[in-house]
Length: 259
Image (cartoon, rainbow, N blue to C red; front, side):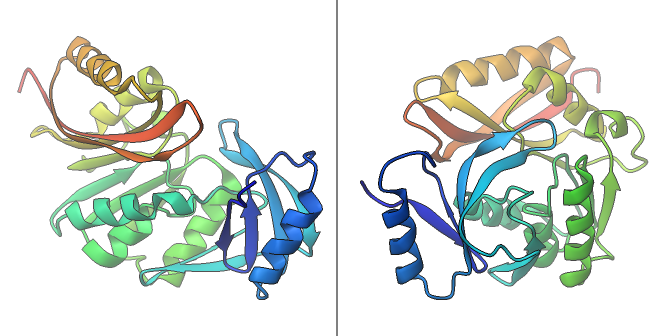
């Protein structure tokens, strides 16, 4: 079978059934092809409200922290405790290219700064509210803000974004919803974060391969029920997630109907 793995810093992450036959051979091939790798992690998926990865050390000694750099943006993190999707690289750069210097941005699920940091480094907007509920991810987010010298742009919050949505003193021009689950739970709070002139929301979701249009209709319906007019600007597949599902992002402009 083809070997599917990714390198994060000096750690290889392989998505396999860790009980499958031939796993030792797969790990050895990874190590041989990548001599700088010091550990190989078997990855099973992301679970829970804290979006924690389920992993198992397959080979080597896992460092306490790894460093990863993408297009001038530096990240430190613990890959055994925190998720970092290398498959979202183009999407991170795409969103950063759309942001303008006068904007206020809210990143509802900031993690270690996967979207926040490219926007801060490359677009340098007026302000980014970076919200993260996981205390471990938040600690790395704060470190990464310092590492990239963007403390004058990024305001980090250790909070549930739903609890913070009504408390932000500055309203957003753009909101990033980089979380796959709970449209009905989180989209109303994203709408609440926008200013009176409306704004853009980037909504990420897992859908079956033939259900993109159903997702759009769900968004139209929910936003309308909450009093918002919606124009979907674009939709795209970020990556294949499984045999039956794809990771998609919907870019939409929304404005309150009562404005």
